[in-house]
Amino acid sequence: MNPVVTCGALAGAMTVDAAVTGACEVAGSQTPVLGIAVPYAVGSVVLTVLGPIIVAATFTG
Image (tube, rainbow, N blue to C red):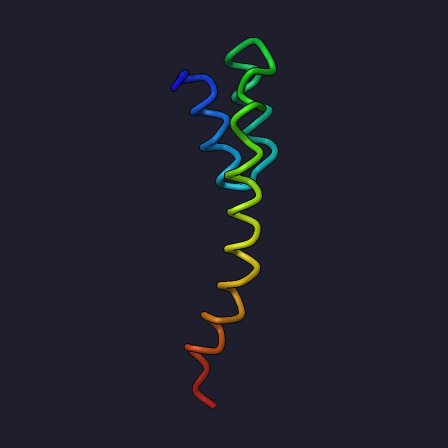
């Protein structure tokens, strides 16, 4: 896999738009954006689903 697309995928997995912008600036092109779609979607779903589960699991009420 192209290292530039991998950097975009890693930035997308962390769901930080500033990281994608930084990767694009370092690469000098918009190529890192190609790798952001799937990791961004998966990261967003996992964060949304696991957040309440972790809170419920640690709740001692």
